[in-house]
Length: 116
Image (cartoon, rainbow, N blue to C red; front, side, top):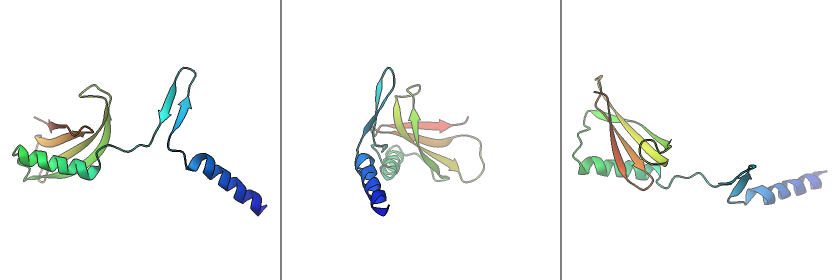
């Protein structure tokens, strides 16, 4: 019984464990399934954002990074694909003018200022 279990595990590993990509077939199309890894890592995105802020003399002395999220744009605002959204917020309560940046996978930076 133990030998059958070992052989079954080896077969599963050989069948699924070493595949780099697969495909999903639907009645009309075949979609490739690949590794989900952004072209720009979060540390690279933060470095790009820091460089952009310094280069454009953006004063963020009273703001701090609230979050950095990997998001997907469907093409409505910029172009279709993944991007990092880095958002700053005020250290003390204020209304608007919080600074944000989109870091696209082609390393293009798009500023996004919120509020009035």
